[in-house]
Image (cartoon, rainbow, N blue to C red):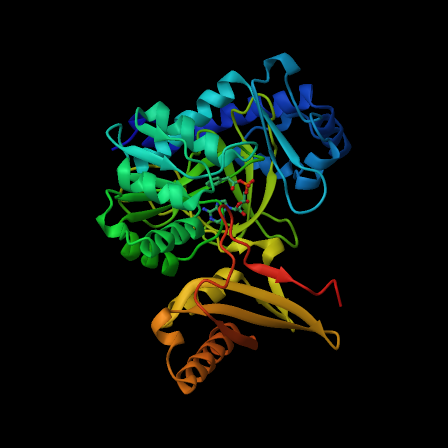
Length: 434
Ligand code: DLL
């Protein structure tokens, strides 16, 4: 089932013609209304008229997150302030927040793209969505909220936190769909279990999970534990919010990027050169319809690849692979590059280990060291010490063998790693303190 069959199945040729038309408009909008873009273009000697083909996008300047910060708060708006109906912001870990504005039409487009995303996951107007993404300046809560309403589903605007109460609502209101971060879904299931409620007895059939990287191993875990279909949703606040790209239930492999609104590219993060389809690199997105704050070639820092093979679901929009991680989350341990998601895969493939972990980085004698703290299951924890030692050795060996890094493994009791109501904190970097 599709929310917008015509657009979602538009033949590639027509889709690309539409993209080119919209790209030209977007570039003009940015050039003539945003002084930052005008000076960037002028510096490179580029004029909107130079855009003749879609591939010409590669001549345009890249936009960095820092550019949003430098123009804080409203310096990248392309419309008069009175046309902005909503503002979101992402806090970020350092420095100023990045701010994003929306016109009435932007908000409408977003709701429609979220409705498309829900429907691609098999959600219909007969469903009730328990929305545990945080409401507020974060785009997750309101993004999913208006998408579900646009679809005609019933929305429960639960937001994050109050986990025990959420369990009660899941039991009493019988929602059929849950939207939250995958790590919070796990936490909810654990808390439910502790209060004697088995998620399998609830009415949920689908989870719409995103806002943080998660592996197919975690998907398998969630699907079994919650007895649902777990689908991946991608987005970032700078470009729009959740619903830029969504996995379809049919294939459950790769996320369709809604290409009538966003032009994706993959670049080599070092050389910044565009990479061909299929090659892994950094996702760069250009907004094609955003009015309030058009972004040209925004560097998401997310590492993925574009999958040009047509999807079984019939949608013609390109898919991107599951995000491996952010280039800024890549760990370099004694020269070896590792992503937290690769460690997650290894942990979850190992019997006896729970999907709660944290990576602690330290610097010892000017060498970076990695400690993997991971919870073990209740029954394993009460096992003999030699069993625990065997498990530790197994994990250490697998990480060494598959990823080439030496990690210290620290098995910890169930419930020791702190749980998050939003994005899980996987990395604790103590290197600066040394
Ligand atoms: O996390 C928007 C969102 C809300 C997406 C709800 C999906 C669901 P930001 O806080 O700006 O926005 O964070 C964006 O989160 O650049 C990725 O690094 C990461 N991210 C988002 N979705 C996924 C995903 C929201 N499905 C940043 N897989 C992005 C992996 C994701 N990483």
